[in-house]
Image 1 (tube, protein in one colour):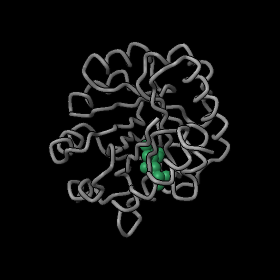
Image 2: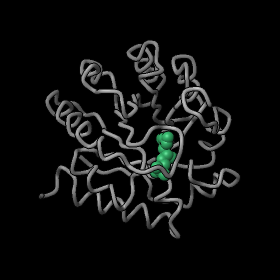
Image 3: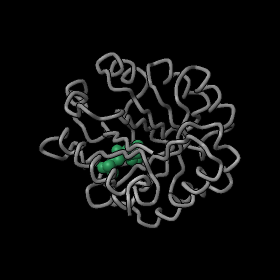
Image 4: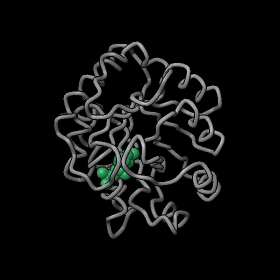
Amino acid sequence: MSVQINPSILSADFARLAEEAKAVQGADWLHVDVMDNHFVPNLTLGVPVVESLSRATDTPLDCHLMIEAPDRWAPAYVEAGAGSVTFHVEAAAAPVRLAREIRAKGARASMALKPATAIEPYEDLLPELDMLLIMTVEPGFGGQAFLDIMLPKIRRTRQLIDRHGLDLWLQVDGGVSAETIERCAEAGADVFVAGSAVYGADDPAMAVRALREQAAAKGADSPR
Ligand code: DX5
Ligand code: ZN
């Protein structure tokens, strides 16, 4: 399991996205939060911005779709250049068909669970996915406090992934910071989204390096 750090541009300056992407050199992916003011009570950006951003940076884009009707919209984000597309299972009409379509178009397929959504009903779907996202805040806004009550779900999900012998990344998103990343890594997460903890730092690239070191020191492959 290798650690990946994905800064969320939700906490960046939207008028300077290309520069903000360069400010996090060394990040594994750029996390792009797409919100439609229906699935979540906030509105951010859509396909044209993802298209421009993918031309402006070499860092691959990890698009987190917090939108209704992802079945209709997710493929357009692959076409716009996203390397990974995450849809919410609560919004998807046909998650298996959608994951297959995302993969067929050439991106990694990922499914997200809100805090109140259990993983167990989706155990049989895991082989269809390249990544599973466990939200550690209610989706919609950056800068919220990490929900410790999600740690048991992260642990149970890691056990399911290992039991099935899957090469499935386990991402956490929301309130991930120097204070909380070690708990997430210990529980079995290996992909860490961080918005305010990276873009709120004086040196965002250094914040990425520091988070990576913390997570690697506590991750599954490290001695406990
Ligand atoms: C929240 C978004 C997150 C957000 C995280 O709904 O999905 O990606 O940017 O921001 P922080 O790290 O500040 O909690
Ligand atoms: Zn997100």
